[in-house]
Image 1: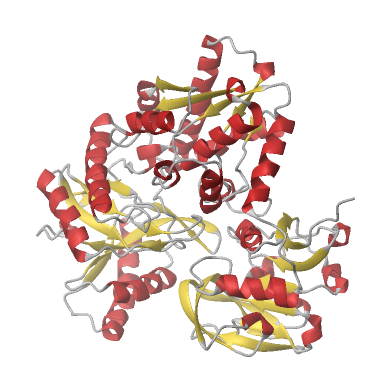
Image 2: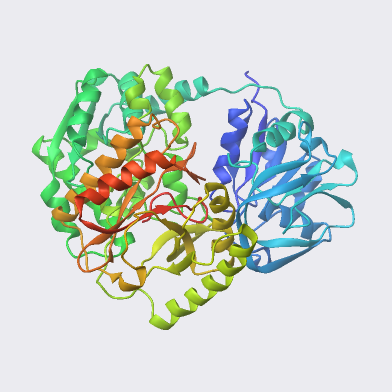
Length: 615
């Protein structure tokens, strides 16, 4: 009998990053899976360590069941964020809530610990928390601190107990040596042996497909991106082309010439069973007059299924003989509130209610649902897909519908609330001006628009702050952007005005705007300019995604544009990508030449606190 692989178990308290912890250990060659918070871990064969995840909740709420018997297993334990608080409180420490949270980069001073082997002095780490440890447990020592968090890392004073807690998130890529910390925990603390690889996923996924689709055929919704294309390849490899029907819908929400590009690239890659259907009128009609971002996403997700059902009926497909397939990846699941304790950040189109019903009834097959974008790309390489497909810029299923923000033309908040936000912004920014040696003329104000964000694992729906800075410096902006969103609760993004025009922001206001072909065509035109300039600068592999947002804010009927380039690996965290001045100015000049916009902004916000897409 084959021995069960060594495993590190993750107790999932609902963090947006919980599954990412398991993904990092797999990247290191160690099997890792998520479990409920009160799971009896003694049932797991060959368990070598335990991690407590972060959470959207406060420890003081005590909303998650937890079995402290885990400490009696005498296994190494690592608590992250909420997990740190759990350890601290259990062993007699004190946890407190802070009036303002901390989201973004921080500098950690590390102490002596096997967990920090190979690290030296100051480390750049990623914070996302509103609680903190006020007093360490008496049997623990502090092994790390930051300027705003004196107890940022603890370890059991008795080193043989092997219990550690970190305030920051080593699992996200923006903690520069986070993977080294997790490697130390896996190999030096838990004594792991490397026994897992991405190739294991391929065979496991193929076996799962063959088992779930036994005796049936599969109807795959194909966007043309790397996720759905890898699914297409996996399904054909597992079942054969005759049992897979691929459908690409032209929703009318696509980028410029995208349908033709998808058809061409998949044809060149050898896919013979791809079918194209023009459904643009159905989507535009369904979205007419809809302003709310969650409602837009749900309408689009439902319509995908309705049209798929119509095509199935036209082809006389027997529903008992067919399964639906999607290219869902893990970030779609977790942001849609896909685990027991996770908050819903945004409902992805592939996670609407009908999809949940199909999952419950076993009628949906999602080959890469547990993987991240970078893992899907690795699978694509193993499957022999061309680089053109593997490195295609990610594009959301709802398409431009969630990049063309909508508005009734009214203020989204009472004027007195916007005034209060602006007063807070002014106070914070005046302090930043002194610290960063900015000029007095540099200004900041809240825009009367709202967008979705994620802070402390919770969904936010707040205003952006717009900066007008005479001599922008990316290093300074990256330092003070998170300060603004940390200290002003009702702001979740920081924008930099870059259009160079003389119009005043104070003369502008909300513009009434819904989803129309005219607006989408303008957005397509601007997006095409941005994509061309990005490719000209050879940034397509440096910039993970480059959303262009049409903002219903401006002077008269002219709206505004937001440029949102980000760098990321797996979409769970992201940093805004600072464009070179010549690239940015070329984009701005070409957009200004259209004479169809009021302002152009650059989104200088990391994730958290801002999601990659605005809706």
